Image 1 (spheres, rainbow, N blue to C red):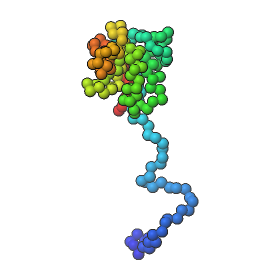
Image 2: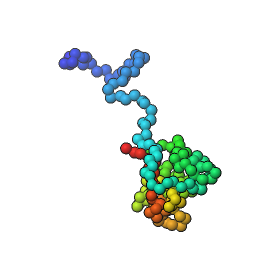
Image 3: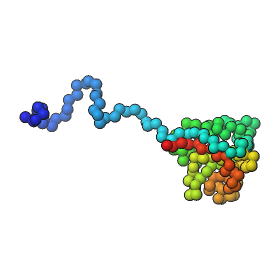
Image 4: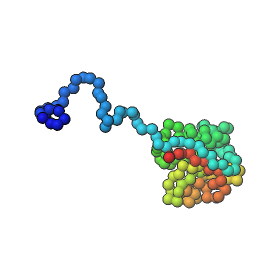
Length: 157
């Protein structure tokens, strides 16, 4: 007989079920659904010269053809999108941002960043000018005044 007092018989058969409630062992985790996103859509205005309304297509944050509320505009663009996929989302919405005068920061390798640049009185259009390959690659007009009012839009701790 084993030292734990149990049976030493091994029958090799399948364990029987009694139809009772399944109990969780310490190693089993209950299914709690998909994990919560680790990133979040945010709007952290870093300040700078006052935001300048810019011509824009109809939608949230646009009044009489002018972008007047960039937070509402951005929120509509990312509504329902997973913030954990923020790089692909930011790539997808870039044309919409540019069409309303908003620039988007990209790194020196062209990798998208979670920072936007808003039009201001000293830079009325922060989007890259057509034909300026450097500005298009970097996502924002290449004039220092156009980097003066940034807003961070994603937070990944």
